[in-house]
Length: 271
Image (cartoon, rainbow, N blue to C red; front, side, top):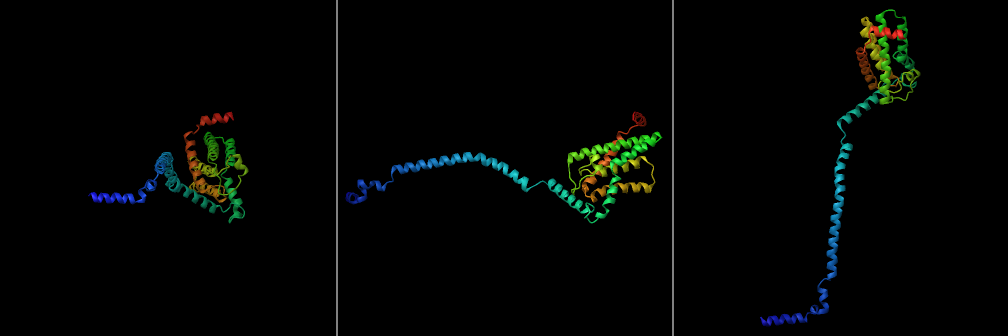
């Protein structure tokens, strides 16, 4: 053992790297270790701070992005169905607008279709009702005519109010006529002619004794007036259908607020 120890000591002495001037080469400098450790600490702190700062943003994005993706990529079934029906309505209304202008396929029949539309206008019906009211001599006739006048005025006001709320344009860019401006029938939804025709046909069928052929002709007239508004490009199909529905509801409203004979006579005497 002493011999082996003496040999190892001799080797250490003879080794050049064990000298004092070469010891620094075998060990890394302290400054580098401290700088590396401080750098690691700083990088760890900045990474931790970055994760802390980015966590609220990432959380907000994770909370917001799925909702936006759902709104853009997964629309509701009701929205898809509504947009599809609206597109079909516009397409069909444009195809059925065969008298929208003179260059259309049925442009030569535009004047006749316009004349059919005038028969469902409010101004001629109000004027005719007033003339019949002046010439009427029976209390029952005056009662019916006064309530018919009330129904016509209600129709004009209700349709004008709904059109101002909806402000829907027609399938073609057609300016309203003079009679349309007088009754404030300037927009498409709902169709004023269709609502008036439905209300008048139901009113006359309910309060006049008519033969079966006349009753059939009255119903056909109401449908023709409504369909004529689609043919000249003033209204969509849904505008006309909604007009028929509103016309029936207006008739039910007039039946609820029906003026009695005494009330009608009082109003006539004031007039």
